[in-house]
Image 1: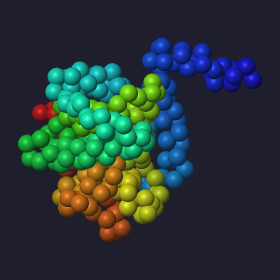
Image 2 (image 1 turned 180 degrees about the vertical axis):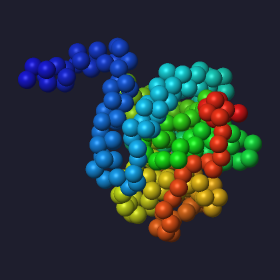
Image 3 (image 1 turned 180 degrees about the horizontal axis):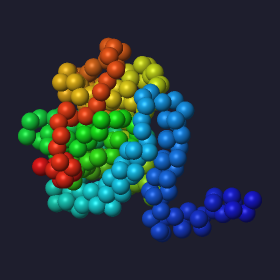
Length: 258
Ligand SMILES: [Zn+2]
Ligand SMILES: [Zn+2]
């Protein structure tokens, strides 16, 4: 079992880090693992052969162009507060919780802003797919990514000096979170929805019914929807959902956000 030993070795880990292979390998794992889960417990029929190649191309665009460009632009506009010592002295798990709570609160309001008349165009592409599965949520324009990153960069200050793996762990978490929200599974998860966004919870947000245009905007914690009046109980939805933006917009305009 020499190869297994090598895979667990410090050498292999260093090789992955030196060559920036962590996220590409994670992506391959997500493709195999999450697609397999969807094939076992599918909620709706998805024509993977028809949509997946296109979505993989969008994922590449996201990885190599959209995200790096957004991070570059955020350097000029993001706020990184210097937090008081008292906050930075709190135990690490508490600060990690603060990071998620603050970032997610900001994400909720940025998302809400993107559902207003004038900003909607930069977010429309995310809602364009008429199907729903884990990779359907990969669409984001550069302006959308720029403003969605802001609360996460702001909240990063709560983490203070972090261990070397924290950036990778949070990056992996964010990727899984986005997959999870869109994943095509039948799981009923009412108890979880008291705290967390689940697939069926976020799928309502992608519904093309005008009733749901501002429903379930939260990304991680459902409390924001409950507090600020955008909560729709997944159990109250009796009809099957259909997805999309209900209009045909040229792909280039969607992808650029104009
Ligand atoms: Zn939205
Ligand atoms: Zn979505």
